[in-house]
Image (cartoon, rainbow, N blue to C red):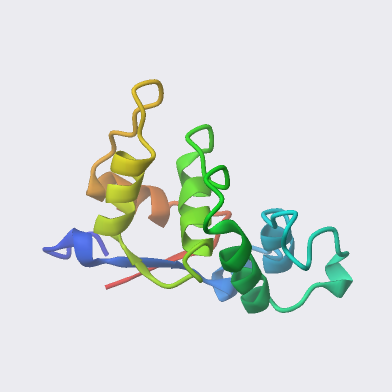
Amino acid sequence: MTTRTDISEITCKISFARIAELNRSALTLLSERLHPDCPSWKKSINELPTPEKLVAEITANCKADESYINTDMPIKEMIFRILLTSKNKPRTIGNLHKLLTGTWSTPVKPITLSQSSLVKVIELDDYYGFELSE
């Protein structure tokens, strides 16, 4: 995966199949990131819609919330939430890198990883179900 000449064009998204391979529940991961304005907020796991519908709820209700993603979060959590607020559409490494190092990096908590380091972080994920594609 990392041998590609233009690493910035590799894409990343959340894979529900990958989450299942990791013996995790997509519904649980997503429900823990619901906003109080989401229709499924506080519903039990049995009452939740499909993961795809939860992603749509999160996008609709959290995209404009400036506090939904913050610099106190680990980088993988930030990536997960960036993908959730964009309907889980594949994002390029270049775009994720720009958001992390430009938008979310602060003097108090600088984010200084390279694009190749970002790919490694995503490749080593064993929790969020990230999937890279060339």
